[in-house]
Length: 271
Picture 1 (cartoon, one colour):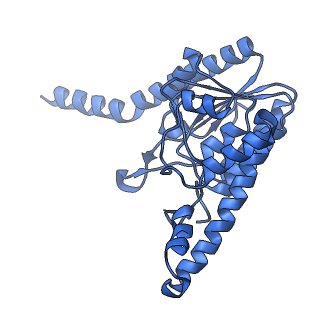
Picture 2 (tube, rainbow, N blue to C red):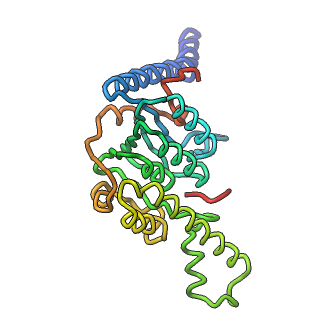
Picture 3 (cartoon, rainbow, N blue to C red):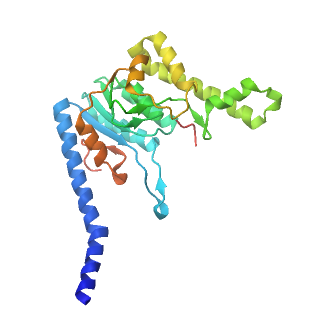
């Protein structure tokens, strides 16, 4: 009986410590193999930005999103890519406007060319990064989304609509202040989107699309699929290599930030 209890304890210890560590190590090894294979075949530097929910305090799930840590890491990673083209694998719900804009500017400035790969979704700030790419490869069921700013959990366009539909004297001061911020945030993002798109679409079409994507015509989580994006003028292809799907599946909660093979060591407005 005692031996059976000892075996049960040993199995529990292995199940909660050793086996998860072995599984993580095998996933890491496989992920590095896929990254190396893709880089050889495509002649590029492959970077992934994969945001998943992860366990927090007392097991509660915490959402991950684009933040200033991401922009810092991305700037360093792109600099190390040198004159190689970049393949950026995106899986994100979006995040801070300031961080997404900074990453988009760095991607836009990379002279060797940038391809963004979206196996499932890159919404909001993720879509802003896709706008900076020379080419977007996405599954035909994958989605991008609008890039209209969100203030205090509400669409900026909603605050501006209040002022259009109500007399100013009937609106509280804090709403007036939020509407002022909303107008500025929308203008800033429209100008940013235009700057990212004009070389690919021409100025007239880029103006239309930038306005469309920031004015609040859709809900913030409205899915834009490949066909609609192509009609809008985005350089979208749906020929996504299977290895990128496998990369997505191998990135778990502990490995959901920017992954780099070149270095194996180691509430403002939102979108």
